[in-house]
Amino acid sequence: MNTQIKSFIIIFSFLTVYLTIVFFFNNILTVYLGWPGIEALLKPFKSLSTTQIILSSLQWMSYILIVAYCFYSGYKINNSKILDYSNKFSNFSSYVARSAFWTIFLIGVVDVIISLLVSEKILDYFLSGSALNFFTKPSSRVLYIHLPLACIGFIIGYIKKTPGFIWFATLVVFAETAIVITRYVFYYEQAFMGDLVRLWYAAIFLFSSGYTLLKDGHVRVDILYVKFSEKGKAIANIAGSILFGIPLCALTLFFGLQGRTSIINAPVLSFEITQQGVSGMYIKYLLAAFLAIFAITMIFQFASLILTSLNQILKRTS
Image (cartoon, rainbow, N blue to C red; front, side, top):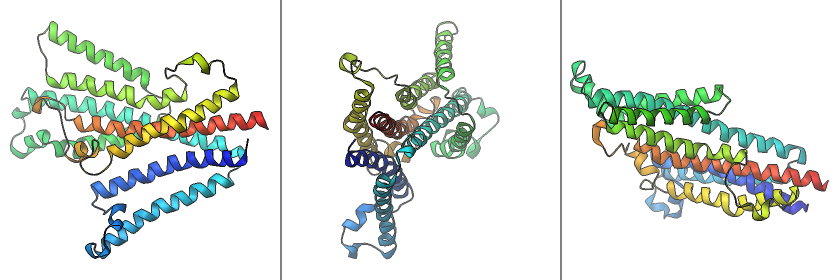
């Protein structure tokens, strides 16, 4: 393979992964912590304070340094290290997906219990005033219940190395069965029951996408692909990832995190909850965040696929 083409593919993979990380953290700094963003330096300096100029410059530097690192690493990397980077990207994608599954499992169980206690006014017997409002106020439930559970979920995801798709899908079946039984046998139904199923369904489809790509389990039209040689399949995987897969995920992430009013940032900032009132789960903001997790895990997995396919081509041409 031509050295320039090889370097381009590696650099593209590195840029995709590391710019995603930088963009995500800069979004947190800008939208959630009040940093000025890289757009600030595009304005007249007279309208900016010294602090804003410094912070915006640091954000610019993060992009410049990571681009320089990607070009340097892309040209210097040995063929023997390509698969190592592929595995690192894939392992990170799997870790985020595992941790997200555990997070949503914990939040789903705890929040549905709280929603049950609130909707049936059971908490009224034990709490009153500000203590009772704590469980019905979105910001309190998100910051002091959901956020610690998310931290626990990412710790479990680090310890547990196996994906939890099968058992999680089984839980969805049990949850849906419970809704049917309580509705038609006991004539009981609350909004939080449907919210839980929607939450877990969305998690299964969006979080398992990266793992499905890793195992080559996504549906594809195999009219031409099955007839390709192993090298031809590797080239098709690289081309498909560069031209279609990564751009789709990058656009999802870019427009979803484009400012405070974007489709992902806005619900998370406002702690947007269910449309069903206090009887539902406080998880609607999580459904928006799922899009970011989906895009990030898929970008990492596509980059891993590109490097794995490149490694296959290099082995066959060496």
